[in-house]
Length: 143
Image (cartoon, rainbow, N blue to C red; front, side, top):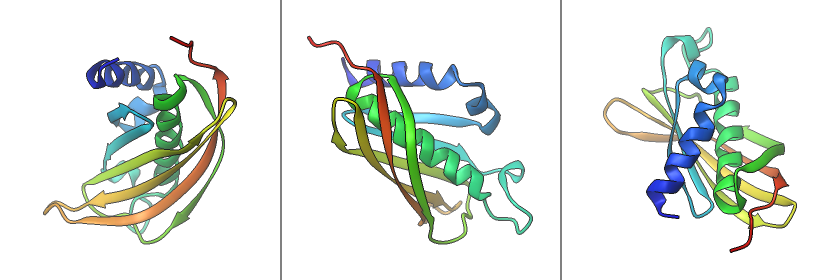
């Protein structure tokens, strides 16, 4: 499967989840055990102090971790659990969650994720990190 074919499949899976449309998430990478999810930061996603709500960061980490696992073992996966550490307030115009597989087993996949905000001038700031495990529900068919 080419990278473009894989990305199209990942985007189809993302589109099948109505909550993603509410948040406005985009999948920009889905290949080789890696996934990138992007969300434009807008007022509806901020908390009372004007920074990105922690729930949006958690959402992005959860989905990016699971999509990275799906890029390694197939799309029949579901989050088993994850932890997130908030490092600094999320400010900027874009949130990018970059996740990668650490180890892919037959029934569990362990992944990690960096959550970066991007300012209008292009400056990036690491605002959270996450790690999680993903259950494999439907193993990928062997070629």
